[in-house]
Length: 380
Image 1 (cartoon, helix red, strand yellow):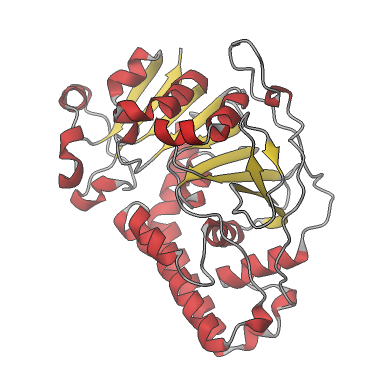
Image 2: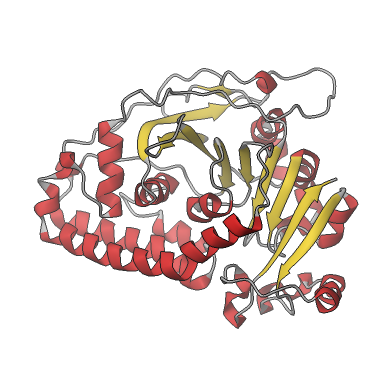
């Protein structure tokens, strides 16, 4: 693989999006509007694309030398096998269900909001395909790339081992565990969500157009990262063959509790600027059941046209009170022991009455006892 150089922090300008200017007076969120950042005809970033494919165990002409190493061949073979199994048991059933369910009309907002996401691009892309912008928020650090020529083979082999565990073990659990991700991202090379994003993007056939770091000012505007400071977020431009425009993945690392937002209001203000969105909530630790996550709950209920969640997102009554027509999907009889205090008896009773069909896949905390529940909310 050609040398993959550390990217210097780029000076960024605020995205050209009509809804991104802060208003002095309160107004209803504007309709979703996304600027095309890079024309599809622009060339891929060869280094980032090669780096992503190296991680994903797929071929790239710029990686010819490193692909001859035995540890990479083993990584590629193991990753191919595990990816095929993952798609067979999880990916394809979800994609088929999404296609058949048709819950995303043509006029649905093109921006997906995924709070408490960590590095989970995999499920975001499955349940909400063809979004122009995906905004993900988590506690995990952003991370950086590295120059492969400076890394000794044993260290590189160790990196790929950690990457493999990070990419596939969560799917056995049904969710990404924050504590496990913290441990994985403490690795010298595997140091943030950038690595998980690039892996999933490459495995899904996307090329990389750019990777840009940014911070946020108090008003939620994207600004350059101060020298020596940790970036608040990262933007990745990507597309597949046949796409008419380059899509954008935005990841922001922050505690979005009310306390976290008071200390650093830029993130919640950035979200308020985005206008209408669709939202995905999975394995969200029942955080929005708590009063001290009311800021992000208000953004979700106030700006979402569609919410797809499991029971860990927000209570059913909260969705109904916010004006969402809600369809119950799958099975719901209990929660795992860790979260038993958040069991919704009223929702369980609704499931018993309506008896929705079992979902053709299992994700989320309830994987532990072989159930999967989803709630699909559409704003009236």
